[in-house]
Length: 333
Image: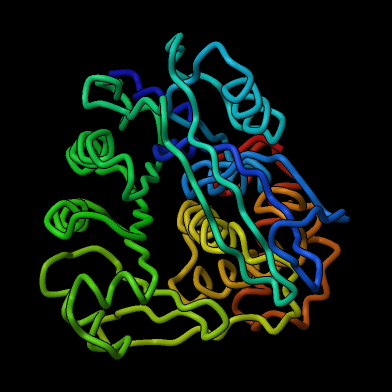
């Protein structure tokens, strides 16, 4: 019997399709008046889309599943994904569909406030998910906003033994728990996890969630770092110390980097450290996709930033990628 055809994709991401309009506010804002700003950017956004761009930038063969119409915003969203290496195989052409639009205000501290609109947005339905999705990819990444499509994709992934990473910011608690029950790895912001569990401390939150899922659980809390539940207890990964310019997309970058490290077969502590590092690099620039880390950038990075274990994992990854047609994640050079 001939061997099965290997998956054509390393990761397929399903989630909100959004165009961001980002502006860095001046130090003084006088409401009702006009202000010239030095930093204003139109860019693709949203959790799964940003994570897809991170995966593609690192070299993973990545797809994004969502609706795109015949309008300017849809063209921006298409270009923002494909120009960063995300493949268009799963783009759904729907004439009257429109991406969501978010206006993101970034203050002097790097914190951002988001105003968004979903008028004309076409959600991913259960029938939009290809029946063979889980066998065409090694990993599925979903967010908590496109839940109908995410549930179908996760059910497929579970049946096929395909890895899955969940990015669950907020949503209906019952649906979030259904998603959690299906995934292999789930990452939640601490605030959202607190609302879901009624607990406060990260360890208590993780233990409460762990009683309802077999997924590897991680909760994140920005500059405070992240925590993960293991059989031996809860471990903590500090955030990398930086002076952020813009925190937009940092959590999304964490998810994309985590998925990449999971595909590479790294141990949990290295996955967390790598994800924290990638998120910190994104925060040094305006917008979640402006300066995505690549493997070439990792080669030039000062290795003293990393623990010995992560340094070894990166060395193995970069050596194999440079010397072979494929890196450990299965991605082309």
